[in-house]
Amino acid sequence: MKNNIKIFRVMKGLSQEQLAKEVNVSRQTINALEAAKYVPSTVLALKLAQILGKQIEDLFELEEGD
Image (cartoon, rainbow, N blue to C red; front, side, top):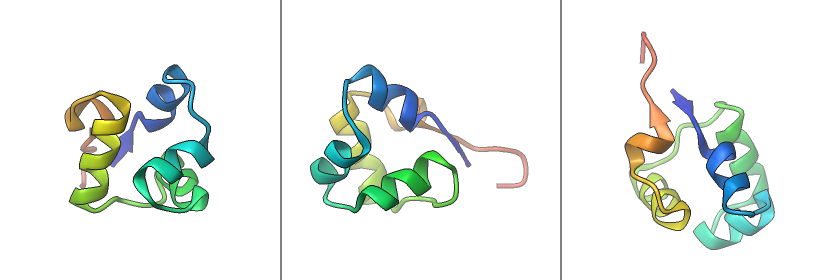
């Protein structure tokens, strides 16, 4: 699954650590998400969308084979 979390995080002026605290996960989790090495739960995806002020569809895109 492709994602645009890093783009929107940077646009919002947040560090990985700050975003992690906002959604109650570790910085490593945010790093793994941005590197597309981790697929978030629905709850985490909703929290990220809310904090970043975006729709889930803006943050995540299905790729062929997902």
